[in-house]
Length: 313
Image (tube, rainbow, N blue to C red; front, top):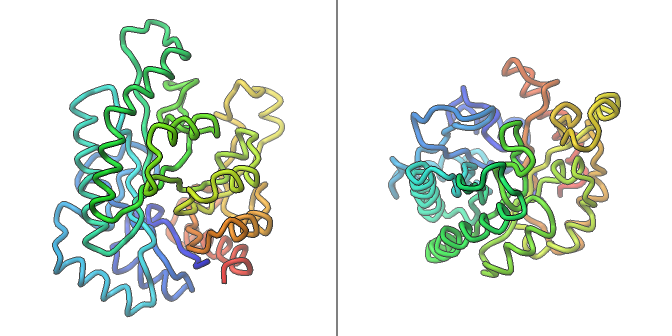
């Protein structure tokens, strides 16, 4: 496995600046953030643009690849994580159209994976949000969007890696804004769209706080894992006591960099190797201990790099 980083932690850096630092710091791959240029940032680490796919041309793609190759870097994936099932039809159309541009841009760059979310909708006619019906409603909405998107990706020789983060906020509790966050929901999703180019971006941190066995998860979904986000998770036990499991981690789930939380990275990488995954490990930075300045963010990546480099060869 190669060791890389997700670029979204550096919104202030250009791709040239970011790639120079990454190369000098011993990283080998980049997942490059590709939100729409000029779009209002929707959340922390969202809205970052290191490649503007609207302006991408074959000549520009060749230039980007040549510059990265000189630094010994590859692009492991392009990343765009919106809500393609958003209940507002105009917003849904906007993000689906941009996701298609990211897919086409990946082909232009020779990148085989696009990381994204399935998204989640809700039925405004369901007062009180009947979650059992809402789940069925969402899978009907999923059928309207995702089979065609996956086929579109296949025509561009691109795999879609769905991250299984619930995207859970106070105003989306208890369903979150990303539908497939558990094994049961993922299996239902793959029953509907079994295409070979439709799979997962594994992020063990989301499984930790949901109390889902990440080693069993890798064993079950191993052939569907196209990309890996190396992010750790800690649990604030005092806050867990205060809020309990129904607090859904709003105050007790603590994102950490690899080596700073509860994931056993030796066991996780061994599990990945055992299912035949030998692509890359992409460090995703959402650790508040290493935020606030460019220097702190970089130091956080160094810590994560040193925690993982033994297992990524």
